[in-house]
Length: 170
Image (cartoon, rainbow, N blue to C red; front, top):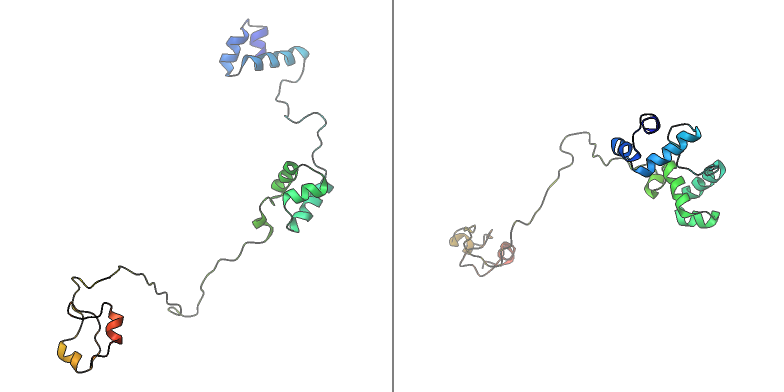
């Protein structure tokens, strides 16, 4: 890009459009080209930035394993909370759930098939009044004989099958 502007006669605007950058970026690269600097991307960190010392990172990790929050660690060490959060994220300790090993999966291991029987019970409908229900009761003669009824009929005074079973037929 810089050679095209300086040696081939391109304008700054043409070079910016050709490379998909702003004219300000082209001027920045031209200034570096003219100064003889290396034409590679420079790091975004400020000059002289060393990062968080290893001792401090170890201390942050120890305090986190005591289940301290990042805000509490930052207040105790006199650091910015964002710095503590960045260190914890690098160490993989930014979530409290990551401090302990995951729970083993809950598997039902049995010796013989059928040891565990799963029964699903679901209320399929609501019956307030007996309407067009099929007749589940035994004939009236069986009801007079003292046999319990299993359901309700349209002529039965009870409204639920359980009430039919509780009712004394005599």
